[in-house]
Length: 140
Image (tube, rainbow, N blue to C red; front, side, top):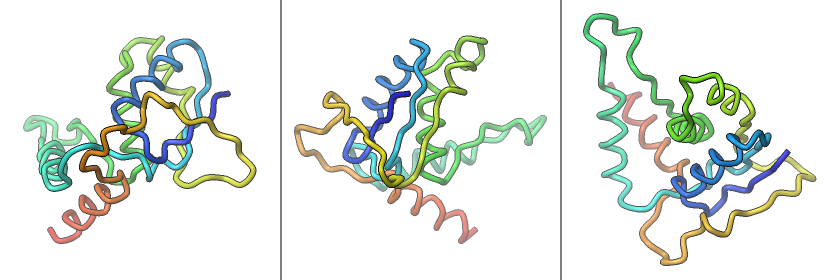
């Protein structure tokens, strides 16, 4: 079991490393999922995810893609996009993934140095993004 601390890690880089570990038959647990960061502007990302949430299948609306508003499920969905989830190998890898918001007591976690943001760009956390997505959804 590999335990990874996602605080301060860029989501895309973290997801790529985790997908590789999962495909190598490792069990992966990610803690502090709400503190993972995305580079860029919060408003642009919010518009991107709101447009994805509004896409509907006209023939069968219940078959439309689901984009969650909770940080741990959103990170899980992003990682699923990097796995071949329609094959048995990808589904098995996806089931070996566990994501937690916050950090349980007494857990030793490693950081992935390649996933940290060295250039100190404009970033926002998954918690901020999900808060914006949730606020917008409640206003409708």
